[in-house]
Amino acid sequence: MKICLLTNYDLPAALALEYLIPTLSAHDTHVFHTRKPIRTNNEKLAQLAHFEQSALKEQGRAFSTLESQELNDINTQGFERFAATQPDVVISIRHISILKSHVIELPKHGVINLHSGLLPNYQGVMASFWAMKFKEPKIGSTLHFIEDSSIDTGSVIAKSYTETRYDKSYLWNALSLYRAGCQTISSSLHTLSNHKPLPREPQTGNSSYFSYPNDTEIASFEP
Image (tube, rainbow, N blue to C red; front, side, top):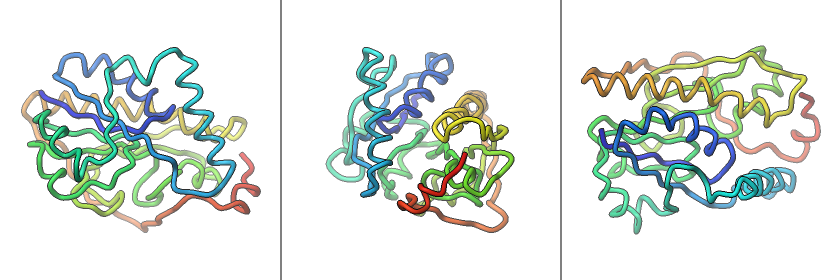
């Protein structure tokens, strides 16, 4: 299959790509990453983003052992570069841009997103932070379809769970999600390769959308 991966330039995305390499090597794969500042004025979150990017540079590579190109404007000027890959399926992992309909409708098998939170309870950003703040015993990730330009609302393909480790940091817990989460991606690609449809389960339960925490919420965070 022809696969297009949309990611962000950060540590979790790089880790996810490394987990996926054994699966992606069997396919014609293109990787595009966004590289934008996070949309928050919080100094601590900016420091975390800087730490992640510095960690990538210290590894001695630009981003991943998979060749990746920067693409920050996929809905507009960058659409032709994206469309030229002729993807059968698009996989989004921490991609920053909200995709528009002409991007979503291009791949034959659709766009699937690995969200680092359990849907619909933890829509939005930094789901692991909020789950830990509310003392959830388990955190997890959700693989779901992107069906329109709404955020984290699409049909669910699979979920994965891991025990929350309150003796570890937020970042440690967030990174711990990606091994199991990427296994759901690998399984889904195997299903598509065998010409079978992916599950499409509607999201059920109470939905909650979270944005970046403010200074007070960060100060009161106790892993």
